[in-house]
Length: 395
Image (cartoon, rainbow, N blue to C red):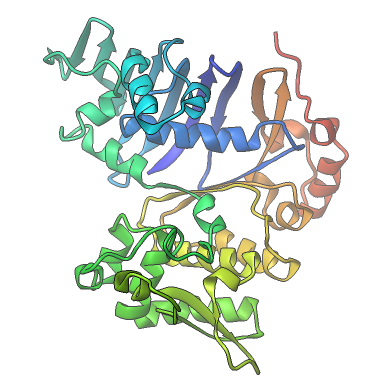
């Protein structure tokens, strides 16, 4: 899918995002604390709502296109009562949490879905009209996207939201304790290799990106080698990459012992470095490179603070890879790092500002930035809105 515009209001948390438009590549810039991460989090919250989760006091409107070129507008709201995540976190036991959730799920106040400007769903608390007819009574706590996901006009929406992924996938390498987590958090299940023999199968699977990289390593070596070559271009001290089980001492479940780990070999070093000991920057760079090759067409990739854990030697290279991506992907990135801002054309910038609880974005054109990239960057860093994050007064 491709997100064209989005607005979001979280009454329970007391903040609102005014409508923001996105391109194939959008770089959200601005001072710390203005709401760049909030924008990405609200998109992820909407992904969760499409999958049946409920959020107290949330209202939204989003316009997007699916990979099939259908244009949708979806808006809705939850009531501002019921459980919130602070009460869940404070619950003593899992069973207590489950009781709180089940008893106090916020209900949907309204939902509207438009396909190519024609309304296909009108939902109010007492009825749901779908394609001109009333539906049987359905759950009041789940979105219409989840409830009608098998219907032909809604299925592309449901699957489109599944294609939103977050850079947080790249931030966890696992731990030194293989009984807790393997390959960025997921086990590679028996039979997985047999199920994904082609690049398209791998791209369209629901596997996490580290598992997809393992599948490419085993089944599509020519694609894996392209990723490896680009990685070595960024990190020339690396000689090779493999994804294989490692020797684990002790009384460990045989299934766990067979799990694959990302491992790298550096020039002049005999021992392989397994993923728990790979530097954060190297690991994150590998995951981001893998996304460019191994996610499905129509994926929306959210990258928060692109510079986090990335060394100066790879920021430029990865930025170039993202901006040159020739597949049907959408990137929404946040950053305040000069290397990244200066290397992405200012037509892709959106300056995020905040006035109390209202977050808004400013277009480059409205900032009267210079015509050259260098001039635009110099003017940007001298803008008061960029330095202190305060935008045009609201209300």
